[in-house]
Structures are given as C-alpha cells and as structure tokens.
Length: 117
Image 1 (cartoon, rainbow, N blue to C red):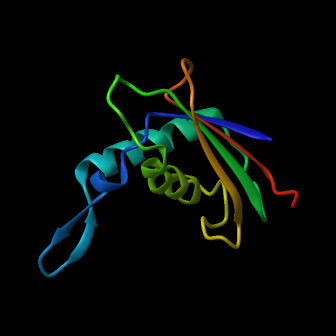
Image 2 (cartoon, rainbow, N blue to C red):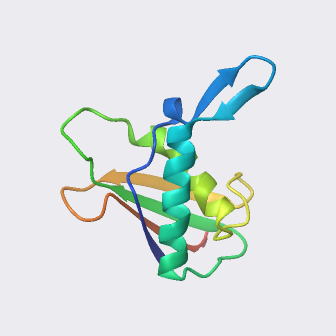
C-alpha cells in the first residue's frame, strides 16, 4: 500500500476554462495546484504501482463550506497519472475509487493499493 499526502484538490469546475480557438485549457489555479502536488509527491519518494489499483481518498475541508468530494476526483487522479504513480485513471486501471471526509489530518491523504477483486 502507498500513502500520499496532497494539498486540498481543486474542484472540477475550477480545473479548465474554454478559450476561443483553443478549446478547454487548464486554469492557472489548476496548474498551480498540480505543480504543488507534483513537488509533494516527489518529496515523498512515492513508488509507482503497476496494473489495477484501488484508491481511497481522505479529505479535510479547508473551511466550513459545503463541498462535493466527487468534484475532487479529476485533480487527484490526473496528478497521480502525471507523476507516474498509476498507469492511467481509466476504468481499466482504477477499479475502485472512494472518498471520505475526515475531521482532521492532512488536507488530502491518498491510499493506493493493488486491486484485489
């Protein structure tokens, strides 16, 4: 099992914007979050996990606003792929994905393990 701590993820609606003639492009906020997350992953010396995986994400909200944990999926899974931790975030590789809200701890704790169906 691999455990990774990340900054609190950017919600899906803040990841991309439409630019005429270019289509959907990453926002500055998303790029900044991804850069910070990639440096955190590098500092933690995380080893890649090949094949099918189960991912469990524990989130600690930065404030008391209502939030949707599912909106964090895109940012978390994409950074795991970009860092080379998992091969792909499609259903071919990510066989189980769960989110939970926690009262305390790191803003985003990700547990990844080989999938055992």
